[in-house]
Length: 350
Image (cartoon, rainbow, N blue to C red; front, side, top):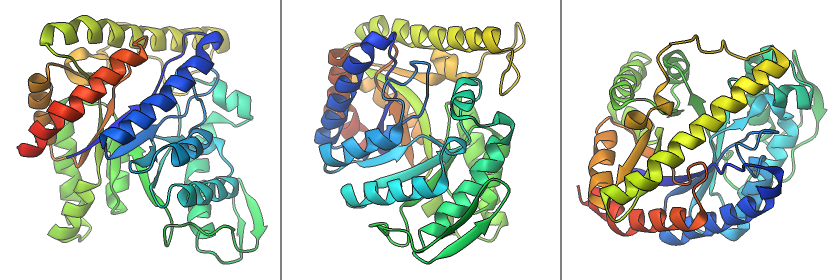
């Protein structure tokens, strides 16, 4: 498996934003120094769920602050971006990072209407805008003059400059939150990023993914390459003992999700609009909110055992969020370091 750090730092108030951004840059440098395979960035606007807000500008900082780890988006909300501007920005970051960029794309937030209102975008058009924007971006990276006359964009431009450092273009991957979304990506013969699911659901989706790739005619070697490029998200915390990890990680994880639920409910009460239907009272909580499915915590030996079970599902890499909710930098740095020094060698040895 490949191992990565998802920088998804919560900021409780506007007064905390600057401090958390500074600490997140420190965390990125430490992640790179420790030898993790990738650093992932999120995109959330106006709600404090992600302190640095914009993964494009923060990726530019990471491209010069780090030297080894790949820099990926999990994900850029493409409905909020102009595809030509985004293609230019990705080309520049691709040069700054010398080809370490992973362009992770998705439709966007499931509940928070603020970004769509703030950017003047109809949220019901998000998926269609995403599809059109991705097609435009891939065409622009070819380095030829082109015109596009579509539903949302009417464009005419000469060759994009600079051309990407990576040829023919930076690596592009999609997120898929549902089985339906995963199947859509699989039918295109592409790898995908999976949000937090139980190990059982993760294994079931990976089996279905491989089966779908075979059905579209991919051979075993191509299927294996695609599987190796798929990622799944888990929250991770490592301490010297299981008891210490439980004492720190569980309250931080629960606080993180309580704040997100509070934000979601507050936005809905204010606006009366939800992008996807609000959960019905008494409905089964999603896996991402449950400790047993979403949080991998414990001593180095315990975390290695739990992540080995994730690896057995057949994923190529794990997107691991180490800083959870109100957790401070020192706790996060200690967890990262223990993971690199004790968990990673254990897993690699297996």
